[in-house]
Image (cartoon, rainbow, N blue to C red; front, side, top):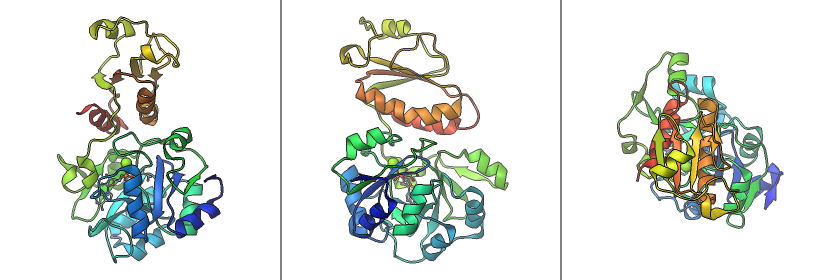
Length: 322
Ligand code: TXA
Ligand code: MG
């Protein structure tokens, strides 16, 4: 069911259903976090590895305190960055929420009015990103409908994600503040604003199960370059003879796509971006469209140094790893 009614979707959730809803980061596929059976259905729909825990979405801070130990530092972070694209891994207070058998839960208050309304009507919602495991997170309703129509019990039509990139995940369950996933808030913004240090691990997968899986991988091969080559240069390097500048309905010649700042010969498949923020917001949709148009060779320009560079680099490295 595709609807604008948060009331209808809240009642579906309360009856054990699965719904998709937008947040300010990406679309989430959610179940009531207190209903284990419903949460497990999400894994089947997404084909998600069973040891990868879900983020629990809350409407406000006082709700989080009912289920989790909120340290004074966690309070400061929540006050400063919530609602917003920051997820905190906290120690559980009780076993009411689905937690994949861990002693911690990841919590987040989305900065999205309709999503928060849904949560406040239904209760805390466990929701990973709404995409088949291994694909880029979905940022547009058209892609959600194409993939999930008929597979879930409801889909909320509301404001589309604005960051189009997942939340930043911090582990606060230990002595140090540890970055588990770089995302829509740059680590350095958190450090500067709060005067704290955020540890970056060599191997975050030791703590965060989701980090060990291959993510965000399009079917085409990704090349990362400092300056984007022209289509002609790519064609000769990869020995492609066909004329690239076709329209997107002609799939046989849609082989090359590029994303980056500088292009003088932009084709239908290329995405020109103007700064790192624009790059971050465009990346997932670009990668997804590459698969839809059967792109085989994907050139991604290195981001500029500075804000959002870490997040873009992280996703480019994951998308290009085999
Ligand atoms: O922006 C977002 O965070 C989106 C929207 C829907 O909120 N959600 C999202 O969820 O990206 P997902 O499942 O795709 O990513 C959640 C990440 C995974 O890497 C998972 O391993 C980690 O958070 N995570 C969840 N619970 C955890 C826990 N208790 N300890 C460590 N990592 C955890
Ligand atoms: Mg995900």
